[in-house]
Length: 134
Ligand code: CO
Image (cartoon, rainbow, N blue to C red; front, side, top):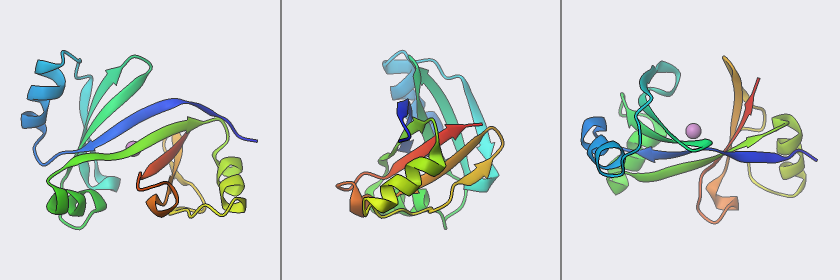
């Protein structure tokens, strides 16, 4: 069975990156590694390492994304939790067999990683991302 190896990141949906950094970087003292434009997700992402994991601040760059809707409804907040796994295909097949609802039945393949989301209906309301480095 596939194994979870760590929490890769916790993603926070934010309407304004600079305003959010006043808490995450300036008040908490975490270091901003870099900000990346991620066109495939229509967002700007600030990567903030925290030990072996990261906090990602995600600011949508379009109104038609899940994160943009999330911010419109709730003003922002914790958006998803991402587990790093050693074999994402096997993990997805195993979850499916256990009756867990998946948003992506096959992983999205991106440079350096594969990713898929598990539906919050099956997780007690938490959007869970699975991530395999490739
Ligand atoms: Co993520």
